[in-house]
Image 1 (tube, one colour):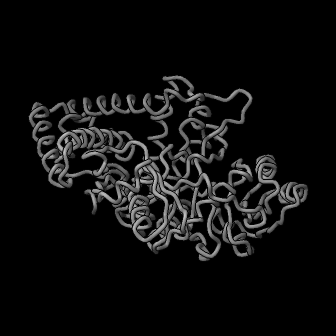
Image 2: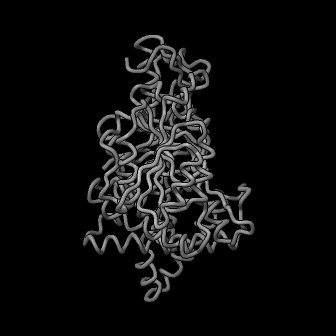
Image 3: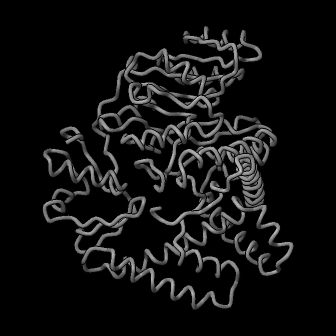
Length: 465
């Protein structure tokens, strides 16, 4: 039993239930769990508390598949002297000042990664009583974090970028996740924020749709899950679990690499969107788009290291064909869709445990799967494969219709994702922002693939492959 006595796990939101609550379907990747009568009784109020081997096994099973999430409401908050914050910085004295102010009274180590004006950085560090490590040569964020990590003696370490504002209270809340001894790393929701007095439309868009904002679904982080990685802009870790640190050879994607290496060695990594940090939006269009491009260039390196975990889409052959016929406006789209949904429903029904109500669940999941396939293929056309898609529109009228349909799907997704956002800059700005975002990231992805002479980062994969 690895989970401690008293550890509580509650059922995740959005699950589908059948057979009087004995069949649970949901989580990520999608999972079906058939409960014994004893397990169902343990979950009578929607939570299970670890008290013996049976309850520990049930709690582990729920957590592993994101069917359950930790209930940390009663978990103690760590003392401030149990965690050290490492802040890598290169110049940015104003942002560093704001970051260190929010982190008080936690002990902080600022790593100056060869600033152009190191005196300004040193003045800010001194004013806040933080420790300073000055690097003579720029190592990049990964190398700078490692330099700070080497000095940490507390059981926990946090990494907070200089353009991130997160309170000491919120970092200490994240430490509660380490009541599960298998958890090595946890991250909050990193929300974008505009700092300009009169932000431009693209700055509002970047704040609303930051690449670092990973949604509101908590759970275990792993490839194929709702959250597959965590941004290094704000992380909390067990110091001994990440002693090897980030890969300093990586100037981008070092956070994805760290998360996946930890998972491969059997550790758990968690995402907790109930805790929030704020990341400054880029104040210039050039800065915004160049960062998107850089993110894209890291795809080829990560694909070479971690294989198809980085695949831009996960599609079964049948769903791939059906979604393609719909986007292409093919005359066979109707029959192919009906056949695909019938086949998928039958396949899902067969894979589900015997239970009353499983037919209805199978139909819902089949439809959901097709809708997700259409959404993924639309993203491929507009984001990951846009150079090929552009070429296709020049030679094929039917492919032009495909791009138009993908744009309509993407618009619907944008509305569903951002309609309630307080920072929403307007529909025209959202549309323009998504197109520029996709163009910049996709260009970086292709640039990286061409430099690596490998299309691996561009290739979709089948489920569970």
